[in-house]
Image (cartoon, rainbow, N blue to C red; front, side, top):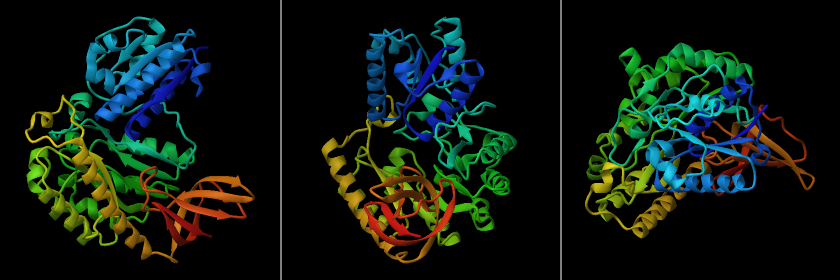
Amino acid sequence: MQKIAVIVLGCPKNVVEVEYLLGILNSKGFKITNDVYDADIAIIHTCSFIKEAKKESEEAIYNILNIKKTTNLLVYVSGCLPQLLQDKILKLFPDIDGFVGTGTLKKIPELILNKKFDKGLLPPGGLNNSKFRILSSNVPSTYLKIAEGCQHRCSFCIIPSLRGNYESRTIDSLVTEAKALVEHGVKELILIAQDTTSYGKDIYGTFVLDKLLAKLAKIDNLKWIRLLYAYPSSITDNLLDVFNEYKNICNYIDIPIQHISKSILSSMKRPLNTAKIIEKIKTKLPEVVLRTSIITGFPGETKKDISELISFLNKGVFQYVGVFEYSNQKESESSKLKKQIKNSVAKQRKIEIENTQYEIFKSKIAKILHTKIDILVEKCTKEVGKYCIVARSYFQSPEIDGNIVLKQDKPLQIGKFYTSTVTGLIGYDISAKI
């Protein structure tokens, strides 16, 4: 029985794809290992959404190929990097044993078993549904990928060329998978796609994320449902209404706005009414916790644009903001724009935005000091006589929003919910006690 190690890079959408792939590989008789030095075969599932991700993927491949030099390891590359480079990837990495793009990940077992390398495995797409899935983590939350691809054409983004047009899964298939995950012990489902709020338009003729959420909310023992990657213009009144209807839909929405200046939004080919959409959300869901993403240093961005952005943030509509310097991908439309911004300027503006938002974040957490919040325990380890517990509350997404941290004499059970009292703040982590 051949042993396979799979290295996954990039976002949660890639993680879900690899979990499907692990299930498929297992069903074909391969043994899964976490140790590449113990493996016969290594698969590197790559990301290349921005230059930094592309560089990370390339470095990972070089590292695994170095292991191959002294072993009999077979090395395959999958995902966004082969999709971006096409057959040029062989010039860059002549020692790999094969590759597939985003749309043919499930063909890797066939590629390995037949030992036949096919350069034609590069249609865009994604592994978005499978009856096989092996979770890569034992934490009580996981991701549910509801769609693949994207119908938008943001000028800075190469996702459509890597992943193809938007393709929703059916409601029935998602509910079936969700029930299986909950039976496996999952307490929280995090809905993801390139754009979650456009869900269903391609197969049902209208936006039906609200209907999917309502069905998921009725699954027994599913405690939290969380929404990431909401596209502003696809947020409907029906979607906001469903948040009020079901208690296990977290009062939290991740809605990447990228900027607020209309001139920059126009150059980005993003919705120009973003500010009004945020206002509508806060009107219908006044207590909702919002997260967003922002790009600094986009071509043509001025000091006035940054001032406008800071003024908007200072209204306090967002609790969490991820700030990214513009990545000038040569394959993107925006790389051809005039008035490119220096990296040093983009970085300084990023720091300015981050500092502004952290003060806003501190003021929001100050309002819940000494109040009680429900938490979901994810880790519990003993350190110097005390138990260190890492948990999250409804207003925190995994890995990006910080944690709830407790230190106490008694352990807490992973995967269980507890009521805790907020006691302080350490960076973006919140301290609490039972």
